[in-house]
Image 1 (cartoon, rainbow, N blue to C red):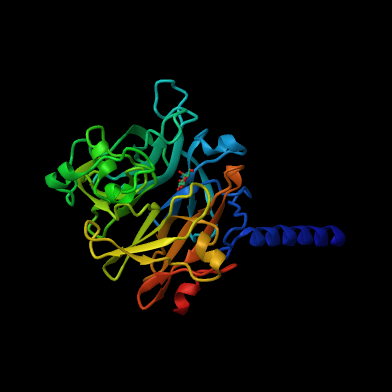
Image 2 (image 1 turned 90 degrees about the horizontal axis):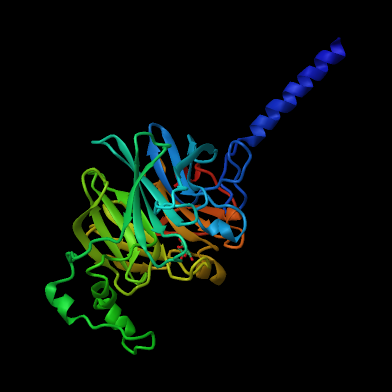
Length: 378
Ligand code: GAL
């Protein structure tokens, strides 16, 4: 009898140990990251929302093999109270089997971002959307809405942006003086891009929208930030009050500077934007820009990464996707990035690093592992 009881205690002890071991208490950039069911988290190109005391992580659900770069499932969502341990909350936005839907299985859905509208009490998701079997040609932004944070999100539509509308920082004169680009060998290619060659080309049909993010300011004004003009120029647009559409107020940002993967945060009334260059799934040197106003003058600071040449040239083998403000902690931000595995996308890894500051300028350096006590030590 005593032996049996001892065994029972041993077993219980083991079980509780196992439970403790499965709780994460640190970030391990680039390593497999298991959810609370023990599966590697499947939410790539992620976006984060803090709502009702929990963080939500929305991202591209990838499958294994090359097909995994297409949307075969949709957007997955996870929840967490502590940013370390994530519970799978299912598919937030499902691809469609309807041949007439733009959201048909096999299209491309990337970089989903969700924001909460306090007035309408709705959750609004925007994402980069490419139509099935058209590669990256369509360059659309898509929008979906839900009454519940975890979904299901109802797909509304996908479209090119601002057809026939001039941005605030591009005049009628600019429009008429822009010169078209005949071919890639054009000697004045960059100059023509800066002066709006692609912008004017796409004016009637609407501007391209690829890598994107959203940002909600303290006054609840929300912005859609996207790589446009063949990824040469970013466009920042104000969203409507219900966040479901773009207003006509928008600007061209860093024209001709080739930014992708924008991720925005605000500190001491300055807006900072991490971004990447254009090398597809391969990593490249990160970039950092700053502005006093979302709709103002953005300027480059430089590469925010410190460390070895390789780390600086590859952004620690990753590409930015979001900056997560840590709730309840002042000036605590997490740089969240993807380490893509295009040959087997489901195995893509996540690189999360604390945003550090030097003279109020953000920078990043590598940490094999770290935890949120980092933010108390400053
Ligand atoms: C990257 C982009 C990803 C994906 C990829 C496709 O540059 O950031 O979101 O679109 O290109 O090659």
